[in-house]
Length: 84
Length: 368
Image 1: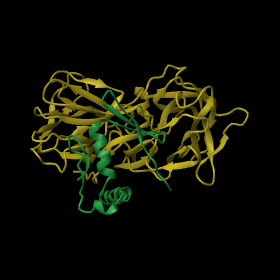
Image 2: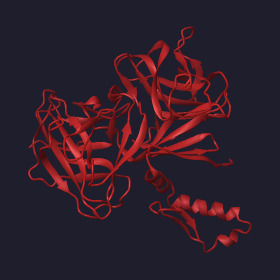
Image 3: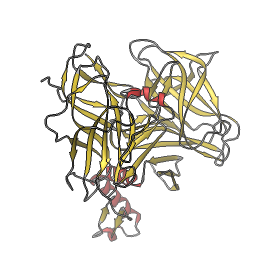
Image 4: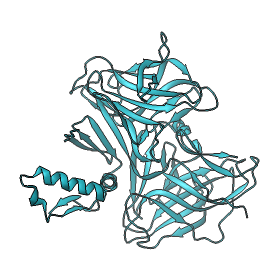
């Protein structure tokens, strides 16, 4: 099963946040904090491990992911997800 | 003293964090959203209206059809509109009706549908006629995440190339001539406030007379983002008039006494001793008051009509209220995700304790 997904829009209206995806779906949040919370609730340790594996296999040389750290911090002003 | 048996009375739906509304663009001839649900138990009802929540419009929308269908063996809409030659459906064009984004609307069926108690039905929304493409379409919300626990037996689906069932609470909404059912939700949002200006937000509530004679409120549970490095108060007020500002009991929080600041179910107990005895049938307010310059956030849902509140717990007896130190301003189409922790329930012509019951539209209560 292939999942190929992009963001087609991010819109704010009256404080609400609407994120639109290339699969014709949209997610609407009460505010940016709620969107961060959605990321936090979804991206637990298991999902974070899956994300790292996905990123590794997307690299020309998967071994270059070794030693990199994935950080998920929905309280951050920017960069909720960072790989460094 | 009568044991309340740890009863938590919801004034609206519960939510573990601010709900997410999920929508699908119906931008071709067969994309569809559907919600599978059971008709209310105990007696037949006559469904006269279906509710849809428009998320956005791109260009000029075509005409769509909303219908009541049966459910096949796979749990998908079976494609057969109920009613035969007198179909239980209706067509509508959001552009033609001048609908605006993020709004909920009732659509009157061409023919009303009489349910069989407990039968499985599907509300289906799909393209019907006119120009539809990537530049001319509408998006509709069909389920929400976080609002209540996920319902396995009632669910939403979408069709793009096949039916896909979704985890979450289906935004199914239908109505008889006398009341709504399901989740007629218009929008989700939040109110951020400090000690400046309108600094106090909460809910009006009235426990019906007959449920009990008297009760106490030990605390409150709600979806709230607490201020970091700042306190806030929770106050219980007597009365439901605009000028009723007498505090019956209260609690002042201490900096940092929560696990995480943002967007959580927070449970807060009053420190007033003894708790005040309240009377069933009387109206009260419970409100959060910011204590400083740091943001507090109370999450809420807006409804299109005050009468839509009748689909939710406590119906129109509970709603949003706010003030900036003076009189209260009530908003009957708005509600927080709030619940009361009850204590010492006594008496009542119903003859028993309040007990929680899960009903369509959220957590409800019944008097046993």
